[in-house]
Image 1 (cartoon, rainbow, N blue to C red):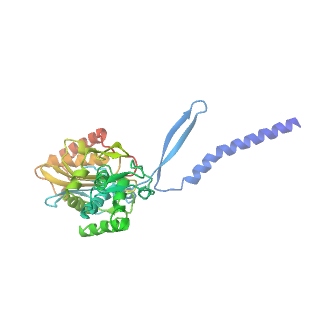
Image 2: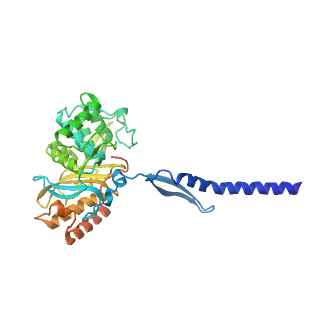
Image 3: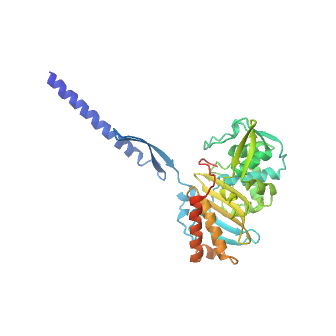
Length: 362
């Protein structure tokens, strides 16, 4: 009897072991067909030497709209990491360089430029105190904010943080405190876009957290040109850093675009943006090689790649000064020396840039 029990016990143990070994494969097979178009990055958390077991967690990497639509396959002579780009002479409207300029994509926090336009157009008192409430908390992306519920700042301070540091709660509070409320504010954003002739543009909220806020590079160049005419937008968007008093304590904020602290750049206006659906975005007005230029970069792949793209363009424009080729040539036949210099400068910028770019949506 004891011998029979021993055989039974051994059989049960073997069966349990077989089931345990099969379970990971079954789970893997169940998930292998799910989430097509979504990449999973495996990160090692810990490793126990004695048992050789490795604890891992999966981080879902969602492709941008540009990646899904294949825009990154579009070649360009400057080898930009942005799937959409436009460089325009501000004074003449001449297009110097373009890449998928009419593609309509999410624009993330580039949205806040229009938020600022509506606020300044309304001529609301900049010294009025606004309060951050629970309504301003991001429930769509769950992004972090240093402005806690109950924080009180002036309208100008909110505008400063929204443009410089891409503060989402500040931008939302600006929209919520507009006459008629948030709905009226969004309507004013779309009305302003229509007035400027931005036919590819649509807004649903004032922060850029929604992927339904969409535009094209051509439209955004129009917006940058209009926003550059507003002194307070120029000043606040290019401010390197700013300190506000929150609950009687100083709190320092920095610009999300490190190029404003780079002495080789003369930037008159800028705005960054990022959500997964939009990729890394950047718009700027800057003086390069004696010309006032507007630059738009959308859906850039890589944390600092939009900065690298801006450097590529800067060195390309400088190498070709005083005469710059038109867009039809620029996108296809940039001289080798200029392209090489631009690529080298961009690589250096991506390696050493001091840009302060939050990891969450902004």
